[in-house]
Image (cartoon, rainbow, N blue to C red; front, side, top):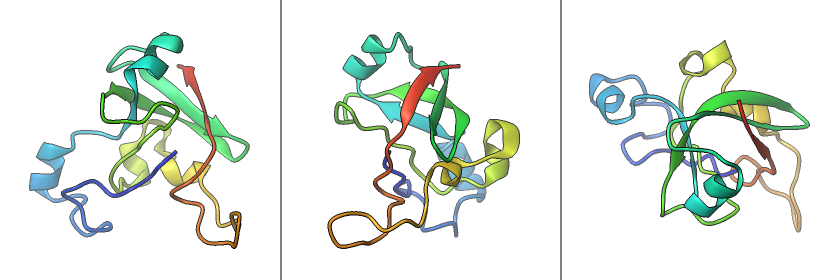
Length: 115
């Protein structure tokens, strides 16, 4: 799971401006077409992302630009933008990562399931 900010956001500064809201309608999980096919997921389907920390429902966005095996959830959405009110940070942690520590919020192992 990669949770990088969307192109039109700067941290959470522009998350809820009218321009950003028009460009980024809702949170979505971008995945490679081959991964989507293997998981029987179609563009726009609601899927569940999860790990030992929790799980969230989110819309699938099938895109050629995602690497196979990588899920991207762009932007800095507030929790209330997600169904159920639990945001993407429910899946990330502050645990040190290999090899020398650092933040894990851009590198988090998850599973994907149809909703």
